[in-house]
Length: 158
Ligand SMILES: [Zn+2]
Image 1: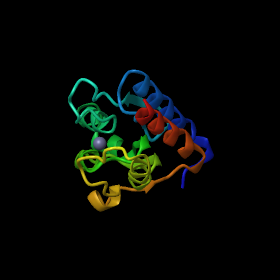
Image 2 (image 1 turned 180 degrees about the vertical axis):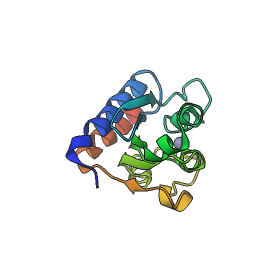
Image 3 (image 1 turned 90 degrees about the vertical axis):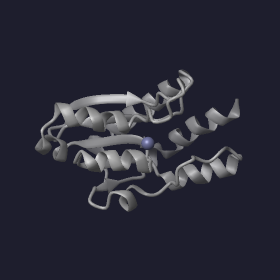
Image 4 (image 1 turned 90 degrees about the horizontal axis):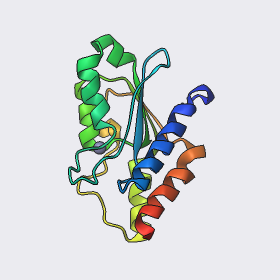
């Protein structure tokens, strides 16, 4: 599902998620990669300013709509530390982006939040494929899940 040769991209997403947490944001990070492996864009969560739509999976979708052709979007992959929420999955599908690779699933995150007594997201944690059935999805990435879990745990420890 996730090839060893592409693992550097989800690893970078975990780094970006760590940067988000260090800057007071929720620990999520994403990378947009072209069909030939070129990194086109990367972003981290930016909701600390109060706009809770500033997910790192949403911005690349909008960026790609103006900077890439339909063919380039279809061939691109979005790697992300956490599975797209329904808002981001919808944006991804509406602009015609290609595959999604996530490290931790929404189901995993929901379980962790429950274990920690943390507030649940205000949007139902539907799997990407329920929101956007035409999108190819791979994940979780088992070797990186613990790192993502630890970032979320730190968010609720302090
Ligand atoms: Zn989202």
